[in-house]
Image 1: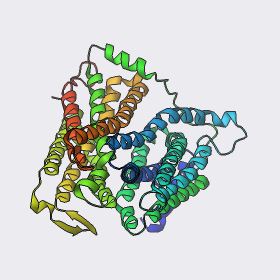
Image 2: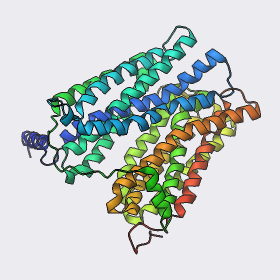
Image 3: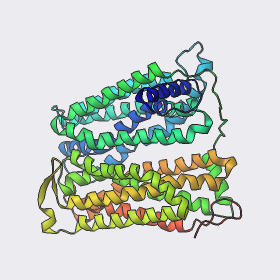
Image 4: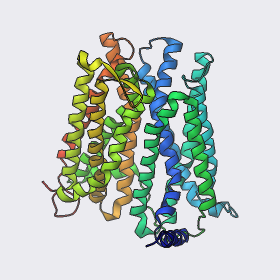
Amino acid sequence: MSVRNYLTNVKESYNRAKEGEGFSFLFTVVIGLGFFTTAITWAMYNVYIPTYLDEYLFLNWGELPFASTIIGFIMVLDNIVAVIMQPWIGHISDRIWKRYSPNKWGRRMPFIVIGIPLGAIFFTMLGLFGTDNFTGSPMTGFILLLLTIGGFNISMALYRSPVVALMPDLVPKEYRSRGNGLINLMGGVGALMALFILPIVYRKNPLLAYLIVSLVMIFCLVILYFTIKEPEVLKDKEEKEKVKIIETVKEFFAQEDKSMIFILFAIFAWFLGYNVIETFFSLYGVNILQIEKEDASTILGVLALMFILSSVPAGFVAKKIGRKRTILVGLGIILVALVIAAIFSVVTIPSLQTRTTFLGMDVPYTAFIILGCFFFSGIGWAFVNINSIVIVWTLAGKERVGAGTGVYYFFSASAAIIGPVLVGGIFDLIKYIFGLPAGLQYKTLFFFSAFFYLVAMVLTLFVKTTGVEGEKEEE
């Protein structure tokens, strides 16, 4: 096939997809630009904001005994705002066309058109008021940063649900699994850009890194606005069951087979382990490895990279040996990697403290061990994360897929809210009990994460069935 014919086919496929017929890789990538903006911003936010907060707390109040708890609480505000706002925004966006006719923007676009520019403005302000750029009084900077964090969280929650809903709105039902995979890949690319490419810019000019992301957000919005035309009547519209989380969990508890309960609490445990590292690793890097925050971003990016590269193989492995076994293998890989990282965090080996330059980063040799641990943890995380929701769907049964999805996200979101605050409090307690200088409490980061993954592994062992009557999970 000639290049010209290939491009013609791509164009025809794209045009059919815009009309709701067939599947187009290019059209789905365009739809995924909205999710891309959320991924690139949150990946950068989770690396740099904890360090800004830590520095402002120290500059204003010295060595606070509960600094880690405060940081953990502020870092979960986005999850709290999301839990409150996103279902409500999603519900409104389902009905806005009818309510606000003759609205010609569609159901989702009004929220996207408002949310992305606001998010871009507040994201730039995060860089403006961060400790690497702000030159005013520490108290003023801290207050402005907190206000900006609040505005950014609300702005992002404003368009997250609508932008995710674009794909099932515009892609025919039979292609949605493929579309969802491509959308998630777009999110992964965004995270990798934030963790690998933007640190290069950040080293030279921190504010410029934030400005670039904000401009990328606006660029994505322009493409979405002039490309996506939402249909007034949705094709293949699926009626979603109304999920009452507490009642659904009670039903699962009442079942004779407790496999669903065990897998849900396992999900809660391993997301505790994951969110603890995501929230506090940049502080670990600055205080324990004594590296720059942007270099901590690059090291953490290895985990994200390996997760993306291992996502498809994780599905093939599950097909060969079963989902439960695949999850256990993944948890085992993560556990071994985290224990190694934990040991080298607390044991001082002089030769590993020697510093070297690697990819422009000034790092101790210990950093290479941590990097290797993240390399394998990313593989293990793919084995776990890709297959867990499928087990929940299967255990829930075909008639309760919506309920299963609801409780899955309830348990994972609960871990994202509880984990950073809980472990932040434990960090402060350790610092107080042992009289540690500020920052040294983060030496124990990997021990806590490993503990949660160990709990998750034990709970997963008690998952006995696939949820299909008469079938046992592969032993």
